Length: 528
Image (cartoon, rainbow, N blue to C red; front, top):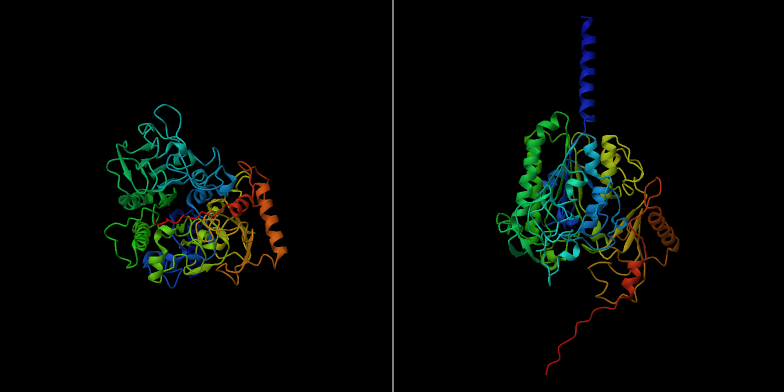
């Protein structure tokens, strides 16, 4: 009888050790990045959302919603650079705009990336979907394609030798496997790529908004279903290895609901609103298929799923059609894709990790999509070198509910035209007049000459950015301007040794040029 307490004690020790080991085991990580999807497009985030998003709602209920998460840019390529490198895009060669389907690689050689770091810690790494970070295509006459290789008046992309291996694509920055497309689905070439090879030679011209070389069997409407199936297949293939101590990381950048807005027949008309909302529902189904695969394989408990978007909703979604049905994809935020306003870069962000993240929780921590690198470093116990993740802050304390203070000092935002903004606490400073992007007041379309050259908003009581109070708080303007300037000059916004940017960074340049631009005025036809 005296042995019973000892036996019970040993049982408790064994159970505690098993539980502790399970919690310490590195998780599988799946990062799903929607393309041009608004914060207000998910019912769990927007109570007035008219879309049905049952799987994303379930993901939110099983984990944590971040209500103050932001892409580093309000357009796609620069945001993707930040996600994988933990570095603001404007430190790279890309100071504004986006890349094209035949653009050269953007991620610098030898730069530490999320997949590279995870490979160093035993992960299998895969990327499935839309790359849009450049890769080097070989030309028939020798050399490598550039942005100029796609020119409607001359080349049309046919000078590329699609039979040759592609250099400096996803495999060169840490991914063991890649399957997908080179850029947005409205940018040629229209071919699938597996690892460093085009899957077939383009022989026809197709147009999914822009004309260009295409494989005869390539159809835009098939891309989301095909990449979804590929992702589910990888989960099934890697499940056993993940249970045996080799976790996986899948970066799943979707082509949807970006243009061309092409939901499959199964989803057409399902929203009762418009094609964009139908496409959002198909995105929700894609998330559901990933969740189902994890559950079926018995690996959902220790898998971290993150769902977010590269920027806000695009005007191509037809805001009027949605407004007529009382649906607001930007929720209560001003602006949309391309803008410096919140609607351009405040994005949905849901994280589920049953083993470590408490279900049904919210976080109001200011976070940026550049934070993934520091977060996975924290999860794996790695220490980032000074020359990596210069703008990345670990979200792990927030995920685990242990954050007792703001994790970020501030976050920097960037518009399609290269206009800067910085956010600290409730204050948001924008170094440009107007939207800096595509909404009104729009540079080059509207007259901005009479607008203040900078904008300051108190988001605590003016979340819709309606009242510019820069003249009332010159001390805040100075503080935030100086902080942003220091980030630019130091080559980083986190503690550590100063680093160099790739080219000069002028935080005021885009704002000044926008104010000087003359608005385009359409000439009226004179009746004879």
